[in-house]
Every structure is written in structure tokens, then in C-alpha cells.
Amino acid sequence: MKPQQFQDLLNAVPLLSSQQRNTLINALSEQNSPSDIAKSIEDSFVRAPKCPHCGSEALQRWGKRNKRQRFRCKVCRKTLNAFSKTPLARLRRPEAWPKYLEGMTHSLTLRPAAKQCGVSLNTSFRWRHRFLQVIEHDQAPELSGIAELDETFFRESFKGQKKGLPRPVRKRGSDKKTDCRKIPVMVARDRGSQTVDGVLKNESADELCRHLNGRINIETVVCADASLAHEKLARALGFTFKELVSSSGIRVIEGVFHLQHVNAYHSHLKQWITGIFHGVATKYLSHYLGWRRALTGINALTSDRLANKILEFLHFNP
Ligand SMILES: [Zn+2]
Image (cartoon, rainbow, N blue to C red; front, side, top):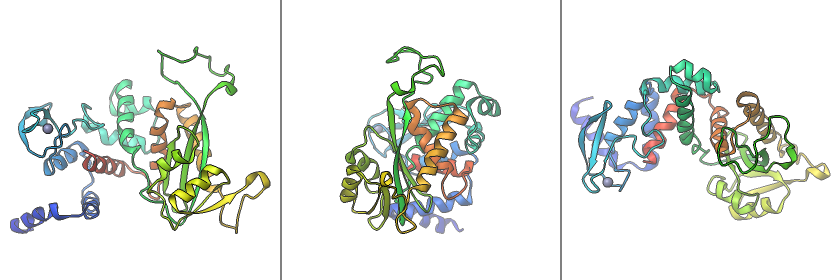
């Protein structure tokens, strides 16, 4: 491309709608897989610099530290870099991130992931949860067609927590399972494998609405168990609700409306959490929901796809 053409292209960037920006970013990232994800993040920041402290776009370059360009905000005068105030702030060894993300596409556990990337177990833990902080937010933009909605429960877990436990430590296997608080988790998944999920504070319609508002096309037919909360949700969001009354044996309506896919999703999710990670702490449950969601999307998960999710998140939520 001639320099003038390229300049015209750059000049047109501020005129793009958010949808056009998305399309362009996707086109560019497919052309150029972000094997150097940290550099892609820095490049993206330089193209649209913004102070994470005050929102000003008036930044000046302010030397380098740890090979990273620093900036100073002309308004609030704080210094920052492309990663400041993002989930990836102060993470080192960016050259090993793609390898780590690759491991995540295979549900690699902390120890082998640490070994593969030559980092400590603590770093492996920190990286996993920093990356998952991003992935957690990558919900399906909008469910459509036929969708299935159901709640399931996870036992409350304080795994890894040594201090401030609300109850005495129990030996593994010896606890009375009925004593545990059960944490409700909602999964809504359409037949195109798009998923919206969330850890719920309670099972009310308002709480379901908080997670699903704006994420279900009103032409969607949603299958769910008959309950007041689901009825109220359907009225609030305007979708068609196919009520299944499993207690009276109505598990399928008209041959296509049922909960078999979402129930299979729940069961695989639980097997994955129990079998691979031997349970997870409740405070990190939403991270694992996001990880599972990424693994079960329409397209197979690759490290490039994960890297692109991170890039998009940092670009649109600076
Ligand atoms: Zn500022």
C-alpha cells in the first residue's frame, strides 16, 4: 500500500462504528496471529492511548521500564504503561504467555503448565487467574434460536484458603456433604453452542436477569423448568418460554424443546472441575465457568483465539 493510502486508512479509523472496529480487528488478527501478544497489546495501546486513571487521551512517552514503553498522562500526571490497571498489569515473561495459553486450551493443570513455561507454581497460578479474569467476561453476545436454561449447584469451597475460614478445616472425604452451602450456577446455551453463564447470589428472577439481560434475542424460544423465577424472567426479557415440568414427566415438548444439552453441559462442567482440578474454590468458580465456556464454543479453542479474546477485551475495556 502506498504511504498516502495507508495514512487515509489510519485517518478513517476514528470514524468507524464499534461494530466496524470489531470487524476490522478480527480481520487483522486473523491475518496476523498474535504470537507476541504483549507487543500486540502495546501496539494497540499506542494506536488508541488512554489514561486508565482519568480517561484522558493526552499521554506523552515517558521512557522505558522493563523493556516496556511508559507514558505520563498530561492531565493527572500519573505514569502508566499499556498494561496498567488491566488484568495483565505487572505480569512478567510475556514471551511465555502464548505457551501458557496453549496449555489452557488443553485444560493443563498448574504444575505441568508451570514446568512447560519454566515459571514457578505461584506464577502459574497468577497467570491462570489473570488470563481467566479476562476470559470470564467473554459471554455470548446474544443467544438465539432455541436455547436451554437451567441452574445447577456447586458445594461451597474454600480450597487453597488457609486463613479466615468461616468453619473449621475438614478432612477430605470426612465431611458431611449436606452441611455445605450450595452455590447456584446458571447456564443458558443455545443450539448453536453459544453460552451465557454465571454464579448466582440467589435463584431469583432479578438475579437471572442481571446475567441474561440483553443477551437473549426476543425471538429466542427458551426451554427451562417451570418456576416462578423463569416465568418472571421470560416476561422481563420478552422471549418465548417453553415450560418443562419434569416432576410430572414432561421432559420434551413438541420433540425439540428440552434441557438435554444444558444438562449435559452441567454434567461435563462438573466432571471437568472435579476430575481435572479436584474441585475449585468458590471465589474462582466464575473463572472456571469462563474457561469451560471458551473450551466449548462453536470453534475449537486455540492459543491464538484466546490471545485475541484478551486483546479485544483490553482494547474495548481499557
Ligand atoms: Zn490521567
